[in-house]
Image 1: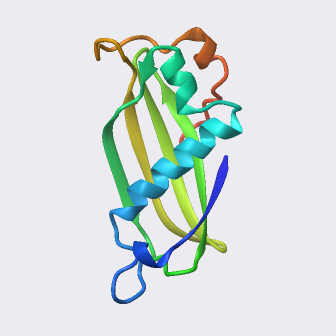
Image 2: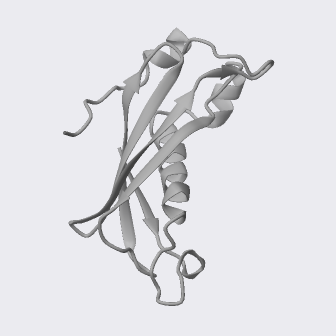
Length: 133
């Protein structure tokens, strides 16, 4: 799924280049939009009594993004085990690949923070896409 985001001035450094840590915020924005595109939201996860905290995050930077760039962030779920999920991201401006990365999430019960299997009602609605080589 594709999420679009325009770089704001506050995301950049003195040279108008996106500060590296903001890519993790972009990943989060893309993830929230991913759920919306599935007709869900994080509120739906809460209603199921689960949360998806990030347990690992990684970003490979290829080229800089700049103030006012319109970014397209491709986000997919590439792994779903019993109690974890992995989202992968590709950030582009125009046709240029700027960054790739992933986040891994634990599936936990909100009432006690313990790992729990992904509910079947959620598992069946999430398309798992093969990871890019």
